[in-house]
Figure 1 (cartoon, rainbow, N blue to C red):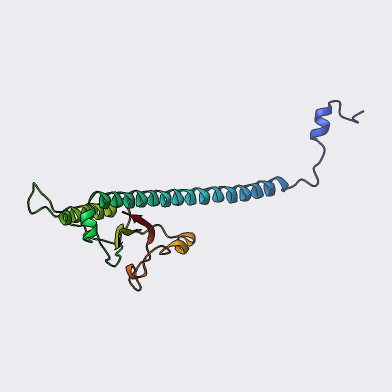
Figure 2: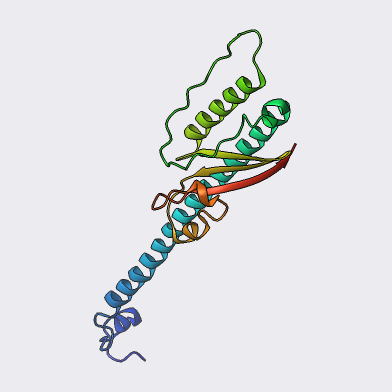
Length: 187
């Protein structure tokens, strides 16, 4: 049945492989190339995920800070109406630490002194919690326009969104373009 070999396993092993020379090496190389593309894609996806989670964290901090400023102004309406919370400086991506003022009479602060203390604490908190963090506040009657500004990691998608909500006068010509969160509050 198997010809001159008595053992069928030996007959299969002795059959010559005419068309299999080097094919398995080529298959392994192609498989490694496909796997390397897949691993590179996964690594890029993870990097994008980390960047987007950091961007959403910055937006959350900015929103909380704007809400905190609004609540401070609601608690000190005299200081708000006197425009003591107003801040319209040009944005700097490296703001200096704000000096927290003290009250002239420690037992009784005026509404303007309370507003100055609130602004300094807010500016220092933004500087520490957001990269290049700063804010602006413009009073318009009994409404407040609040802008929280920060620098975020550069990507093509974030460049399109930068400065979309910023006041034009807040950004210096040729300066860094910050990311802005805008909030309007009625007091």
